[in-house]
Length: 447
Image (cartoon, rainbow, N blue to C red; front, side, top):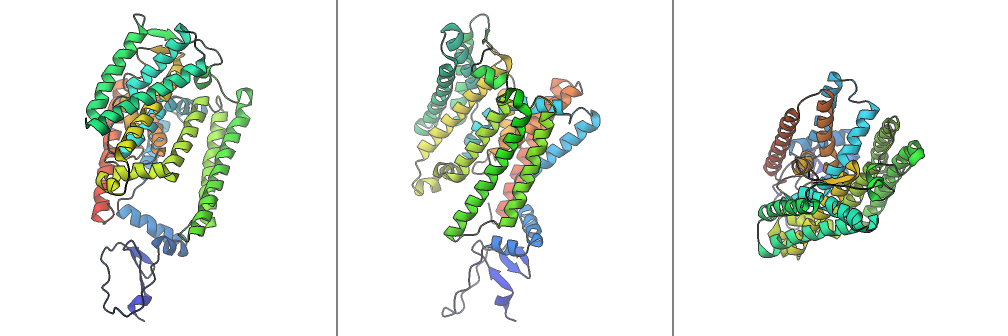
């Protein structure tokens, strides 16, 4: 039997020999120019033809090549839950998990915006101050000027977008480093917030049916919270099913590799189990909070923007290499400005979440460790500090880790200082894993 009957070379340089996919970057020499060309086979097709064995082989190849994905943070989250549950059996109770889902949403909104900035390989140090300023502006508009709550909400978010765009303009057009621009914003906007709050340092927001009440003090489903939890879980499963089959149909029509129906059903089935289990757990407490619903909706929308739109692909392209993006015709300054605007907008939305939780705007809004926790959430969740790699779902995973640590230590009556040290250690571990992963990918010819 000839060698060509045992070996098939893919476009990515992978070689499959006797059922094993191995990394290889060299190209076989064309000894005979008159010979018929060898068919190019996508390695994903070979994997799926082998069934379960092929997926296991592909998984091993990815781990060897440093393509860890969300695996480290998921394993870390499981370890954290096991440890805290062994120390206090109330940790995995419905009430405690409901608190985790509620309190992670505000900082999680800041982390969503930071994912965009981190994808460019930059940093935004102003999000905490912008969130505090947004909540203060909302309180001033509503309490001191009698403005309609929804109009005040829109103006606060637009202000956050404008502040972010201003930071992006200084960075993209003037050339001031993002670190310096946003550090100045961190100080300046915090000062403006303190000036607006005045000597009292607090503005109490009326607890009515406005946006603050909806975000922090009530449920969309009210007395139907139990029905609502399962309705949301079912909606998520249906949307996933429609999205996966829609992608399969488009890829079939384009003649490119696609996920087989069996794989889609397994993926959606796992999502269904996780969704309905989460709904059942939350139903044993207060149901699904509005804050969590809005947070999850934002994750779905932003994930679609990043993965399914031209704009999202441009963000990844700029983060992967500025010069290459320019040569491809991408307006790099525009991408930078809009990314910082998005970060400022989500910071403002997060500020409204904080205002909803306390029904007030205070000196502590957006202060303390809010900024550090938002950055840590995005990085711990898997978004690379080096740019060009990450997912908006890292905001969810990272916040689950951080809020689980916070809640677990509170149950154990541990000092806040312990929380900071543990969170710092987890953050360092995430960055180390990211660095090692990138080095492994480069060694495997995939970096």
